Image 1: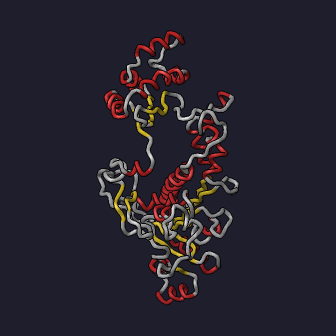
Image 2: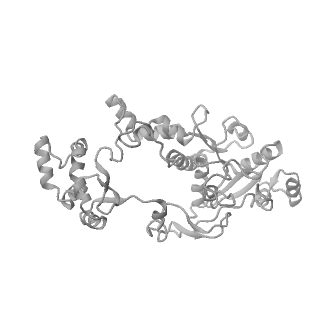
Image 3: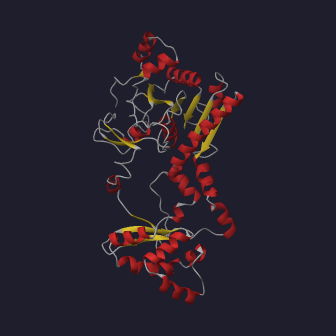
Length: 406
């Protein structure tokens, strides 16, 4: 964590991945992020993965370093308190519907310079999830084995994560505009726009329009260059990629491919050096030369050869195996051991992904217990007395961490 955004306060009313991620990134850089949930927890409060006690490790990590306010959002009093808090704070991140009780125009009636960042599904307000957005923009059709035409979903919620990062960026951009002009406003971020726009930025839209057809499925091959998975003599599957001329010449030298490649060039009437496109077009023939060289070597011997020639490679791992890599976790300053998690489970947790060498990096703070900060937030932000807060708690409008959660 860093303290770059100290002094910035944001109210977050959200669930699942994209919207909470936006708040998380702000909190990791020092902003005060007030996460507001339904008393007892919202729809993602017990989302898998969970512990034996039904504590969500997803919720626990997406809400690190935030403050927690629990309200009864099913009734008018709780919603009015939330509205007052948003107006008092001036910044809102949410994935609630455009026309709901957190509609920007309604909130802005009491705070003209309010900045709202709203994560959506489709631009017209229709529901979409990462899984359906990915299917809609065509990436699932390109994913999977070569001998099976069925679409394959990836398990990483990539569009959710990109949307969360873009939402944090959009929030800061809108705040900067307000500082310069005094104007607030709403920023809407449809998940499908993030997905389609990202695909367009990678050239996918132009590619299809230019070629008049979709890209062929490649399996584990890398589009436009030489890269694929191979298996060594001792059964280690690894990815090898030669994405530029230095990598290519290094691969040729590491695997002693100069002579067989020269013969292949003569047969095909092409030249591979200096031409990534030609290599890609004839990738299957090149892979056929690489494969026996790889299968004849142990992973240790192959890795030594590739490293000596600056070729990019890496073995496939399971997550338990990845956790054992010191570079990724134990010796990575991004991670710190946390023992004060709401679940009671102690483990290394991630902080800010960025490294700022000139600033001190603090360990990631834990997620709050649900409602842990309710009384403090209402007292400091809305100037409510202890008696008023106590009455709201007694009436079931405000929840605290003292209350058992279902």
